[in-house]
Structure formats: C-alpha cells, structure tokens
Amino acid sequence: MGDEQRASSMPSDWKVSCTFVAQVMEQYKHQLLGFFYKRILGTKGDAEDLLQETALNLTTHVQKYGIRKIQEKIHGYLFTIAKHVMID
Image (cartoon, rainbow, N blue to C red; front, top):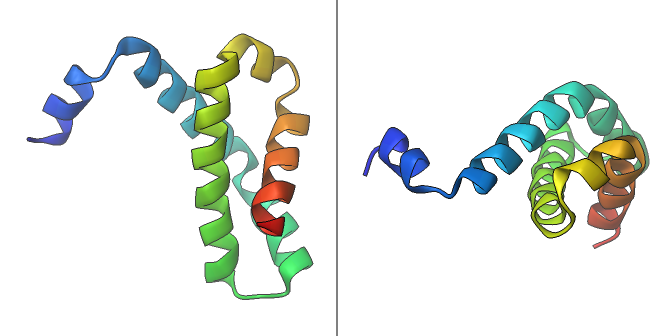
C-alpha cells in the first residue's frame, strides 16, 4: 500500500493531528534540539532520537486532549513532554 493510499484510509482527525504535530515540531525543532543537546551532553543523533519521541508523545496528547486545548499552551506542553522523554 502506497503512502497516498495509507493517508486516505486514515481517519480525518488523525490526519489533522499529524499535520498539527508536524507543524509544531518544525516550528520548535531547533529549540528542542538545543534543549536536549545541552542537557544530555550527548550526540546530535541522541538529541534527534529524543525529538522523534517527543513528536510521538505529542501526537498521543493531541489525540487524547484535542488540538484546541494543547494549542493554547503548546510551548508548555511541548517542553514538559520533552523533559519527560529525556528522563525516561
């Protein structure tokens, strides 16, 4: 199954959530990478792995609480999720 077929078979709310998360992650990518890199003193690869985990967790939160609630305080949500990802 191609990407377009998979995308068309996803529920529309899932597509909206994924689009929202992609936009947020693009907007905060450099801030989050710096946040991870400074705190873990690891490699850029480690920071990028944590960035991906943050995106997955943000997607879960968006699905659970809705875009509207998260969008109101996205910076706080995002960096709280990032901090927890780093601790785990």
